[in-house]
Image (cartoon, rainbow, N blue to C red; front, side, top):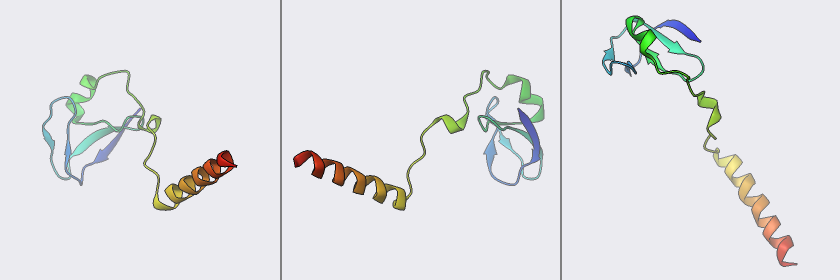
Length: 79
């Protein structure tokens, strides 16, 4: 599922590995976030792998919660 956008960050076209110029039109896949020139769109490898399938790095508060939970689990195990 590609959406057309104007590029305002440094991005590289996936298929041709050339830089997408500032302010130029490009396409970005909503599923895998692949970015490409309009003329390279048909060369993007399929099937795409959605980026949401990978587990995100936990934030400090989430990490603290996980550590606390593990501490209590190990404490219960020792009792």
